[in-house]
Image (cartoon, rainbow, N blue to C red; front, side, top):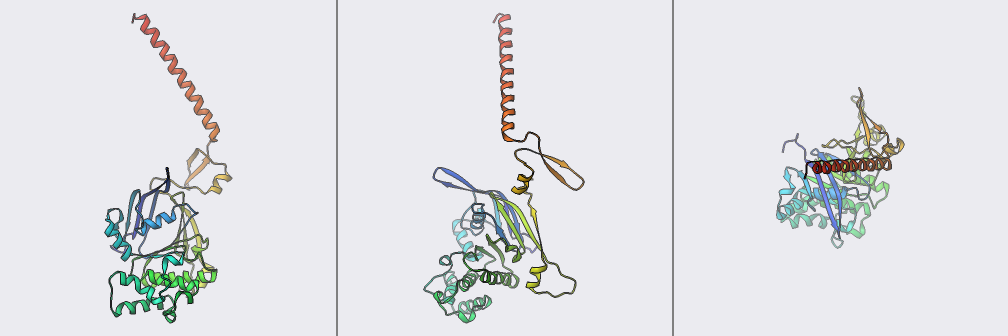
Length: 335
């Protein structure tokens, strides 16, 4: 892969789950492109499809349709054994629940060593790299502490070190700050920022935190299984001015853009639709500045249904009259 190529490509991604006799569509043709080394947030309401996307990217699930590439791997073409190897080597996972990240009867450094042991690594290099990772996340002096001796935020930082143990190219974090206070959450975000900057790991963070845009470079919002919007962070700095991260938070600007997918579809925010009473059909008008969306006359669904029924009745009557004329014609011809 060259640096110019995308690291992740999702093309018309669909995921359907079958629950009892019902089919639940979690992803409905999602398109997404992520560059190598991006630090990105993924937000959306419960059931929007963001966790399904993470599971597919992490190799924990397969899509129902569409295509997905990660780091040059076509995930749909990988066999089960190849997918297991992909999960073990190429992806690091950080979960919200501590029980999914760490083994409680092991201390911090033993937890970090475990993925390397499972990957077949032995010798002193394993312990040395585990110590290095714990130093990177700020826990070098607490490497021999058991989990019960660590705070929730410290445990989550150990989990990040565990996720990086096999030197993955991608880090997936599912609500990593969901069970900690705001001060601890800020420490965790700073840890992700440092790792992304220093190690170049492509990092995706799923979150319900509306303020996540302040801690990542880009945020994508998923709604009803499709990409709905992107929030871009732009840093404001005068030429030659050196500023700290705290100063950036006060001066950065954030712009939310609605996403147009490959089929030309977009998801207009609900508040806009309600304000202008837009439902059903709309009119598109070309202007010098772009495309204008206007509510169409008689776009109420009840009125639409009434018009449709009237048209069907008229069509049925017309067919009936044609049938009578055809029968009369046959009789006059002696048939």
